[in-house]
Structure formats: C-alpha cells, structure tokens
Image 1 (cartoon, rainbow, N blue to C red):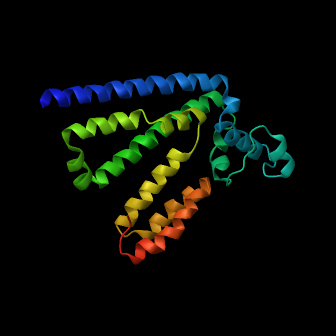
Image 2: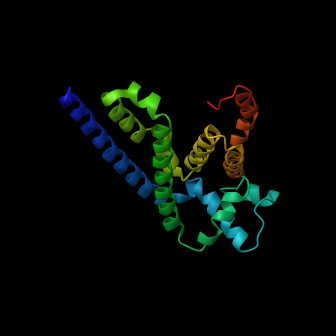
Image 3: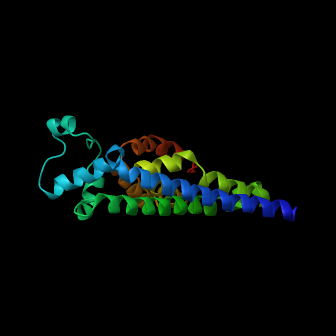
Amino acid sequence: MNLKIGLLWGFSVLSIALAAYIIADYTVFALFFIEATDFISYVLAAQRIGSGQPFYEVPVVFETPAPYIYPPLMAVVLVPFAGLPIELVFVGWTIFSIGCWVTAIALIVYALRQTLLPRLGQMGLPVLVAWLALFPALHQHLIYGQVQIQILLLLVGAWLLLRRQRDGWAGGLLGVAIAIKLFPALLVVCLPYSAACGRYC
C-alpha cells in the first residue's frame, strides 16, 4: 500500500511539473500573440482610462479588435499598470492567477476536510492534485489571461463567509465578483433559497 501511495504522489509531482511546463510554454507563446488574448482588452481599456478616452462608446466597441464589454472594475484596477510593457503585466497576471487558483483550492479542501479527505483517502488525494494541475480549463484561463480564477476565489470566500453567518462580508465579495463579470449575479437568485433552507451548500 505504501508503495502505491508513493507512486501516486510521484505521479502527482510529475503532473504538477508537466502542468508548469505547459503553462510556461503557452505563456511564452501567448506573449508573441498577445493581441489574441482576452487580457489585451483589459489593458487597452485601462490605457484609455489613463489617457481620458472613452472605452464604452459604440464606435470604440466596434472598431477595437479587442473591445472591452465588461463592467469597468478590471479596467480601473489595471490603470496603474497601463504604462508598463504589456508582456510584463501579462506574466504578472499569470503568476497572480496561479496564486488565486492554489488559494481557492486550498480553501475548499480545508473547508471540506472532514468530509472530503476521508472519502479521498491516502490514494485519492494525490490523484485529485494531479487532476487539478492538469485541468484544461485552468491552462486555457492562464493562456488567455482571463478572470474566472479570480472570480472563483471571490466566490469561494463568499461561500466560506456564508458558512460562518457573515452575510454582509459575503455579499461584498459577491458584489466584487459581479463587478468583474456579470454572470456571478445568477447566484443572487440562489441565496434566498439557501437561506430559507438554513444552509449554504
């Protein structure tokens, strides 16, 4: 049994190393084609804010190759970095996204440790780690410089706060998530039902 567990953890370490290589490789690739990433729209909007130009007007939206069609928060947050080389900002965003991913997963595992870890057992945990490292959606997020991982961390934080009956703080984090992209607003419909049942997932 110990040999099997050791092999599984070795597989997990190799999976993490492979994931790191894939992410690094595609990040370098994305730097050469950064105009095709989602991140470029955030930075261009931040540059427009910094120079006092509009970024929501119809001509701007239709004439810009990467139009900004989201709430203004992300563009405002990136204004201090708009003057830096976009490649440097993109790499920094990638590192930040990885940190958010690891933090979100760690918080989920910690919150569910009493039910999740016994079910996984010693053999299931390394398999979970390997699967999370090789998760294709994670790689796509990092390659295109998207914001879903940041939203995930905010929603995990809101969920944990709801479990501790800190509804106001939870609502604040949910509000920030909605201010980044609108789709988390769908969760507002679920909250009254969860509260009526006396539980939050």
